[in-house]
Image 1 (cartoon, rainbow, N blue to C red):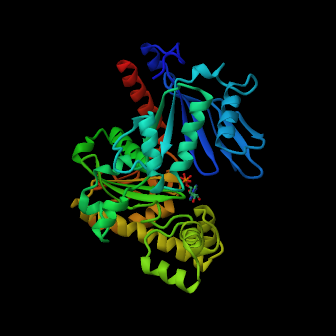
Image 2: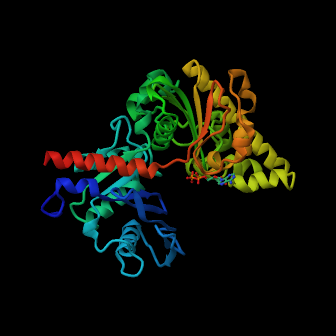
Image 3: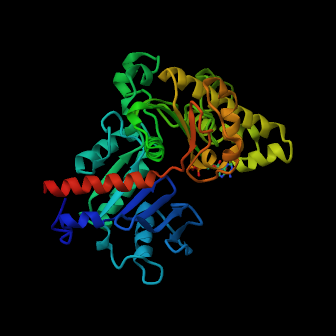
Length: 421
Ligand code: ADP
């Protein structure tokens, strides 16, 4: 790390770090400023519609104050400059100047087979992330824009990459390979990578902390269900299978993504509708899933309302399909691990929809699981055990906190690096 450009950074400073977390998407930049000493978030928000009309940056401060700043954000560099300007501004800011930011942690979607854990971003690491852009063309290039921008805006600031794929690098070969010609794995790295790894990691660790149990002795199924959804089988603390694959398209039914679908369906549609790769990608990523089935929305709240209040058939069908797919994955992962001790729900749907949690768990009583209806009903967006005390399988709700993992990894890695310089 360049101490020349960051002269005030002493080793003992690292327990008192302020870390900026960036999650750059193609047209949005989510940010959180962590104060690691106070374990607080003085500022967080998002720059939306980057590169589009009507762009703005939102800010939420620790005291609950919320402000929206409208302005033209032509690209990620401008967006991040805008965010930094806001958090140091006299009127709305929470730090006096940019020197108070000790490090930046980035969410990076695909780290290929190279990165099994979070890393300090050097020029070599940056080049590897660039290389993996071909595996995640919708995600890695946007993540990289955040890295480039910070290099320009605060030269020399330590940066760390935390990969969505890293936690799943422990999958055994028989679980990560696809049954297509082996040469394509060698040629292009086609295999299951899995995503949402930081969330699956966090909720499994946090649940064990709450239960005071040793993760190395448990079989866990984590269900991250939000706009994007995935499930992971975690055996003795390691990810052994996960529902997302080469891309975040495989597995559960999602807001606008199809999840598991016979590949033959896609080639048939491309042929009949005379569409190319780009339109086919849009079809399965943006027009399918809950939106495609229900025609109502991709938002689970609106779908649940349409199914119950309006008795909308397609909304009901979508819900039934979503629940059925989730149940099948739980069954598959119980078989994969020869049992299960703990099932955890998280993500916008998993944390907030008692009806969906109940429907998924309803027929799992044969495994000795005793679901507690009352606790389930009373649990929204908070940590809770929703199975009965004597249940053979524990069911929990644990709100995810990927940003905290990114902040902690960033602090740890930057501290280690400071010891080496
Ligand atoms: P992302 O994957 O973009 O991070 P979230 O984890 O925030 O998304 O999840 C968004 C999903 O959670 C949406 O489908 C939304 O409808 C759903 N959701 C949020 N609150 C509720 C609720 N109270 N009941 C049912 N679904 C909910």
